[in-house]
Length: 429
Image (cartoon, one colour):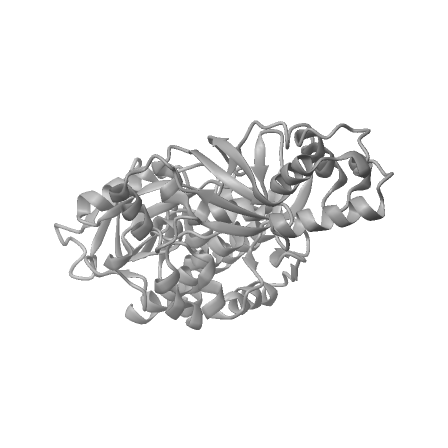
């Protein structure tokens, strides 16, 4: 018999357990983890460095990074946010650094620092860690053999456990979502989020590793009827042409980088409806439009007529990308500015400011699989992260229908939900 059972040995589960113990050290707490290893997502996040949060300290701005959960998280972020997360780790001797793009990592540059911190804390508080304990059933305690206080029974592959409170912190786990659905919770069907775009196009082939600032947008499908267009339009907040601006990374298989990942999160459901076959438009120079760039090129033609276009790189984009776009515009490598036709310059201006690409599928971003979907947010009290349907059941992390545009924001959702649930549990027992 436990006071609290936490289902899921990931970031949210550990963080919640530690805060419950800190709020009420007398409580008997257990973490049930289905695998032999814990904190596996923490280990791989940020390329093994653990992107613990993001340097966005204003709740009203922070929530803008959550395509699902923006409205619900505003209140919780006023209670526990980025600065609180940093303080938690620094209190335990882990200094957090901020990189130029706002991502925050432990100064050690190793996720193992975070893992060891969590393991040390649960040992210090005497929290039971039960590995290889996959949960097969969750339900209200029926036979009352422990009296009125034993509210929940949790059946693992090994044995049945009883608890006064339970926290479901299992992330994107189809089996647990099925158990919650059987209980009576509505589960929003999960679809992938945070993925890269598979593109095979001569304009970006052969230059993997190149990164540049660009604007990218998903184009609506031209063949969609008005009824379907209207349905998609309302589903994504009135904007069919979803856009994102920031670093775009050219890869062996297509496009990645922060701008692409943000777009994949914002358009997760729409792109799933498209079966990941769609078109994107990219402006490699977001400060220019086609006509403005064409005017610049005509000025260069007058000023430097004897220079070759291929070698000039007349604008501030990577030289290898400039070369690809010049060749794709049917401009020979030895052609001089004096000899280029207006049609060729128009084509080059078009490719730089409005290149359209066919996306033919997606790839998971590294090992950081994230989904859009989970427990319907209408069924959760966000003052406590407790189920509105089942008192004594709490949620934290990606088990809820909440996801963010990058990993650090997803972790912040986990830390915030885990902390608020822990405070509510600590006060209720």
